[in-house]
Length: 233
Image (tube, rainbow, N blue to C red; front, side, top):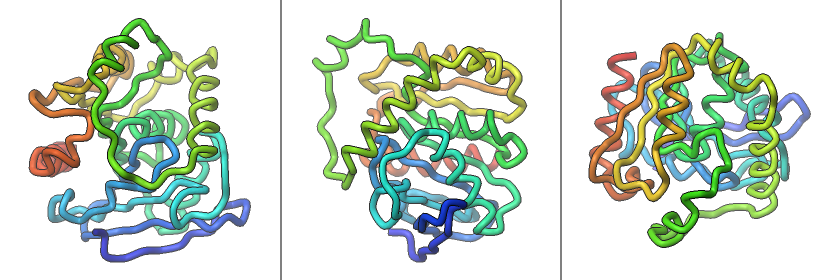
Protein backbone atom coordinates (compact mmCIF):
# COMPACT_ATOMS: atom_id res chain seq x y z
CA UNK A 1 0.00 0.00 0.00
CA UNK A 2 0.98 3.67 -0.16
CA UNK A 3 3.64 4.31 2.44
CA UNK A 4 2.83 7.78 3.81
CA UNK A 5 -0.19 9.83 4.74
CA UNK A 6 -1.00 13.52 5.24
CA UNK A 7 -3.97 15.43 6.62
CA UNK A 8 -5.05 18.68 4.95
CA UNK A 9 -7.66 21.05 6.36
CA UNK A 10 -10.32 22.06 3.85
CA UNK A 11 -11.59 25.64 3.69
CA UNK A 12 -14.56 24.75 5.92
CA UNK A 13 -12.34 23.12 8.56
CA UNK A 14 -12.93 19.48 7.58
CA UNK A 15 -9.86 17.25 7.86
CA UNK A 16 -9.09 15.42 4.59
CA UNK A 17 -6.72 12.45 4.48
CA UNK A 18 -4.45 11.77 1.52
CA UNK A 19 -1.96 8.91 1.13
CA UNK A 20 1.08 9.18 -1.10
CA UNK A 21 3.91 7.20 -2.62
CA UNK A 22 6.83 7.81 -4.96
CA UNK A 23 8.78 10.83 -6.09
CA UNK A 24 8.59 12.80 -9.32
CA UNK A 25 5.86 14.76 -11.14
CA UNK A 26 2.67 15.01 -9.09
CA UNK A 27 -0.27 12.77 -10.02
CA UNK A 28 -3.64 12.93 -8.27
CA UNK A 29 -5.40 9.53 -8.34
CA UNK A 30 -9.20 9.57 -7.91
CA UNK A 31 -10.86 6.21 -7.39
CA UNK A 32 -14.43 5.42 -8.34
CA UNK A 33 -17.65 4.80 -6.51
CA UNK A 34 -18.47 7.46 -5.75
CA UNK A 35 -18.22 7.34 -1.97
CA UNK A 36 -15.54 4.63 -1.71
CA UNK A 37 -12.21 4.82 0.07
CA UNK A 38 -9.35 5.36 -2.36
CA UNK A 39 -8.74 1.80 -3.55
CA UNK A 40 -5.93 2.93 -5.85
CA UNK A 41 -3.62 3.64 -2.88
CA UNK A 42 -1.30 0.74 -3.62
CA UNK A 43 2.27 1.59 -4.62
CA UNK A 44 2.44 -1.55 -6.79
CA UNK A 45 0.03 0.09 -9.26
CA UNK A 46 2.24 3.08 -9.97
CA UNK A 47 5.40 3.35 -12.08
CA UNK A 48 8.67 4.72 -10.79
CA UNK A 49 9.28 8.44 -11.20
CA UNK A 50 5.79 9.57 -10.15
CA UNK A 51 4.62 11.17 -6.91
CA UNK A 52 1.07 9.82 -6.58
CA UNK A 53 -1.54 11.25 -4.21
CA UNK A 54 -4.61 9.25 -3.08
CA UNK A 55 -7.27 11.26 -1.22
CA UNK A 56 -10.05 9.54 0.69
CA UNK A 57 -13.21 11.45 -0.29
CA UNK A 58 -14.85 13.65 2.32
CA UNK A 59 -16.88 11.49 4.71
CA UNK A 60 -15.18 8.24 3.71
CA UNK A 61 -12.31 6.26 5.22
CA UNK A 62 -9.89 8.49 7.10
CA UNK A 63 -11.40 11.78 5.85
CA UNK A 64 -13.87 13.60 8.08
CA UNK A 65 -17.11 15.17 6.90
CA UNK A 66 -20.17 13.58 5.36
CA UNK A 67 -22.49 13.61 2.34
CA UNK A 68 -21.61 16.37 -0.10
CA UNK A 69 -21.94 17.57 -3.70
CA UNK A 70 -19.58 17.30 -6.66
CA UNK A 71 -18.92 21.03 -6.30
CA UNK A 72 -17.63 20.41 -2.77
CA UNK A 73 -15.57 17.46 -4.01
CA UNK A 74 -13.92 19.72 -6.59
CA UNK A 75 -13.27 22.38 -3.95
CA UNK A 76 -11.69 19.71 -1.75
CA UNK A 77 -9.27 18.81 -4.55
CA UNK A 78 -8.18 22.43 -4.80
CA UNK A 79 -7.76 22.62 -1.01
CA UNK A 80 -5.62 19.48 -1.14
CA UNK A 81 -3.47 20.89 -3.94
CA UNK A 82 -2.82 24.11 -2.06
CA UNK A 83 -2.30 22.36 1.26
CA UNK A 84 0.22 19.96 -0.25
CA UNK A 85 2.10 22.76 -1.98
CA UNK A 86 1.49 21.39 -5.48
CA UNK A 87 1.45 23.98 -8.28
CA UNK A 88 -0.35 21.72 -10.76
CA UNK A 89 -0.78 18.00 -11.27
CA UNK A 90 -1.89 15.34 -13.69
CA UNK A 91 -5.25 13.96 -12.56
CA UNK A 92 -6.09 10.30 -13.13
CA UNK A 93 -9.61 9.14 -12.40
CA UNK A 94 -11.10 5.66 -12.54
CA UNK A 95 -14.83 5.12 -13.08
CA UNK A 96 -16.70 7.88 -11.20
CA UNK A 97 -13.30 9.36 -10.39
CA UNK A 98 -12.85 10.00 -14.11
CA UNK A 99 -16.01 12.10 -14.22
CA UNK A 100 -14.77 14.10 -11.22
CA UNK A 101 -11.38 14.58 -12.89
CA UNK A 102 -13.06 16.00 -16.00
CA UNK A 103 -15.15 18.45 -13.98
CA UNK A 104 -12.09 19.51 -11.97
CA UNK A 105 -10.16 20.21 -15.17
CA UNK A 106 -13.00 22.24 -16.69
CA UNK A 107 -13.40 24.38 -13.57
CA UNK A 108 -9.71 24.69 -12.60
CA UNK A 109 -7.66 24.33 -15.81
CA UNK A 110 -4.62 26.10 -14.34
CA UNK A 111 -4.37 23.40 -11.66
CA UNK A 112 -4.55 20.40 -14.00
CA UNK A 113 -1.74 19.60 -16.43
CA UNK A 114 -3.63 16.70 -17.99
CA UNK A 115 -6.46 14.25 -17.33
CA UNK A 116 -6.20 10.47 -17.64
CA UNK A 117 -9.79 9.23 -17.53
CA UNK A 118 -10.03 5.45 -17.20
CA UNK A 119 -13.27 3.45 -17.56
CA UNK A 120 -15.38 6.49 -16.82
CA UNK A 121 -19.16 6.57 -16.74
CA UNK A 122 -19.52 9.42 -19.20
CA UNK A 123 -21.75 12.45 -18.87
CA UNK A 124 -25.16 10.83 -19.23
CA UNK A 125 -27.85 8.83 -17.46
CA UNK A 126 -28.95 6.81 -20.47
CA UNK A 127 -30.39 3.41 -19.45
CA UNK A 128 -31.08 1.87 -22.87
CA UNK A 129 -28.19 -0.49 -22.17
CA UNK A 130 -29.49 -1.38 -18.68
CA UNK A 131 -30.41 -5.01 -19.46
CA UNK A 132 -27.01 -5.75 -20.96
CA UNK A 133 -25.34 -4.04 -18.00
CA UNK A 134 -27.11 -6.16 -15.40
CA UNK A 135 -26.71 -9.36 -17.40
CA UNK A 136 -22.96 -8.91 -17.49
CA UNK A 137 -22.44 -7.30 -14.10
CA UNK A 138 -18.94 -7.92 -12.81
CA UNK A 139 -18.36 -9.23 -9.28
CA UNK A 140 -18.14 -6.46 -6.71
CA UNK A 141 -14.90 -5.96 -4.85
CA UNK A 142 -14.96 -5.68 -1.07
CA UNK A 143 -14.14 -1.98 -0.68
CA UNK A 144 -15.18 0.26 2.22
CA UNK A 145 -17.80 2.81 1.23
CA UNK A 146 -20.39 5.17 2.67
CA UNK A 147 -23.91 4.86 1.28
CA UNK A 148 -24.97 8.41 2.19
CA UNK A 149 -21.93 9.91 0.46
CA UNK A 150 -22.53 7.65 -2.55
CA UNK A 151 -26.17 8.75 -2.82
CA UNK A 152 -25.40 12.47 -2.44
CA UNK A 153 -22.67 12.41 -5.08
CA UNK A 154 -24.81 10.45 -7.53
CA UNK A 155 -27.62 12.97 -7.16
CA UNK A 156 -25.16 15.82 -7.63
CA UNK A 157 -23.75 14.14 -10.75
CA UNK A 158 -27.22 14.16 -12.33
CA UNK A 159 -27.59 17.85 -11.50
CA UNK A 160 -24.22 18.57 -13.11
CA UNK A 161 -24.91 16.80 -16.40
CA UNK A 162 -28.17 18.78 -16.67
CA UNK A 163 -26.41 22.14 -16.38
CA UNK A 164 -26.95 24.23 -19.54
CA UNK A 165 -23.29 25.22 -19.82
CA UNK A 166 -21.87 21.70 -19.46
CA UNK A 167 -20.99 21.02 -23.09
CA UNK A 168 -19.86 24.60 -23.72
CA UNK A 169 -17.41 24.25 -20.85
CA UNK A 170 -16.08 20.97 -22.21
CA UNK A 171 -15.69 22.40 -25.71
CA UNK A 172 -13.75 25.36 -24.31
CA UNK A 173 -11.52 23.28 -22.02
CA UNK A 174 -7.81 23.55 -22.87
CA UNK A 175 -6.60 20.71 -20.63
CA UNK A 176 -5.29 17.65 -22.55
CA UNK A 177 -7.32 14.53 -21.79
CA UNK A 178 -6.59 10.88 -22.48
CA UNK A 179 -9.92 9.04 -22.32
CA UNK A 180 -9.47 5.29 -21.90
CA UNK A 181 -12.11 2.56 -22.10
CA UNK A 182 -11.69 -0.95 -20.75
CA UNK A 183 -12.36 -3.25 -23.70
CA UNK A 184 -14.36 -5.80 -21.70
CA UNK A 185 -16.17 -3.24 -19.55
CA UNK A 186 -19.87 -3.98 -19.16
CA UNK A 187 -20.52 -0.30 -19.78
CA UNK A 188 -20.64 0.94 -23.38
CA UNK A 189 -17.85 3.20 -24.59
CA UNK A 190 -19.94 5.59 -26.70
CA UNK A 191 -20.22 8.19 -23.90
CA UNK A 192 -16.43 8.22 -23.62
CA UNK A 193 -16.07 8.59 -27.38
CA UNK A 194 -18.48 11.54 -27.24
CA UNK A 195 -16.46 13.14 -24.46
CA UNK A 196 -13.19 12.74 -26.36
CA UNK A 197 -14.78 14.21 -29.49
CA UNK A 198 -15.98 17.27 -27.55
CA UNK A 199 -12.84 18.31 -25.67
CA UNK A 200 -10.36 19.84 -28.18
CA UNK A 201 -7.24 18.24 -26.68
CA UNK A 202 -8.74 14.84 -25.90
CA UNK A 203 -7.99 11.42 -27.36
CA UNK A 204 -9.87 8.13 -27.04
CA UNK A 205 -8.50 4.63 -26.82
CA UNK A 206 -9.73 1.22 -25.71
CA UNK A 207 -7.58 -1.41 -24.01
CA UNK A 208 -8.66 -4.83 -25.28
CA UNK A 209 -9.28 -7.79 -23.02
CA UNK A 210 -9.56 -5.99 -19.67
CA UNK A 211 -12.63 -5.48 -17.44
CA UNK A 212 -13.83 -2.35 -15.67
CA UNK A 213 -11.65 -2.87 -12.60
CA UNK A 214 -8.49 -3.82 -14.47
CA UNK A 215 -6.39 -2.01 -11.89
CA UNK A 216 -7.25 -5.11 -9.80
CA UNK A 217 -7.27 -7.87 -12.44
CA UNK A 218 -4.48 -6.62 -14.73
CA UNK A 219 -2.16 -4.47 -12.58
CA UNK A 220 0.69 -4.71 -15.10
CA UNK A 221 -1.56 -3.25 -17.82
CA UNK A 222 -2.67 -0.49 -15.46
CA UNK A 223 0.91 0.37 -14.52
CA UNK A 224 1.98 0.44 -18.18
CA UNK A 225 -0.92 2.78 -19.04
CA UNK A 226 0.07 5.24 -16.32
CA UNK A 227 3.75 5.11 -17.31
CA UNK A 228 2.84 5.76 -20.95
CA UNK A 229 0.50 8.63 -20.08
CA UNK A 230 3.02 10.33 -17.82
CA UNK A 231 5.78 9.96 -20.41
CA UNK A 232 3.75 11.44 -23.26
CA UNK A 233 2.11 14.18 -21.19
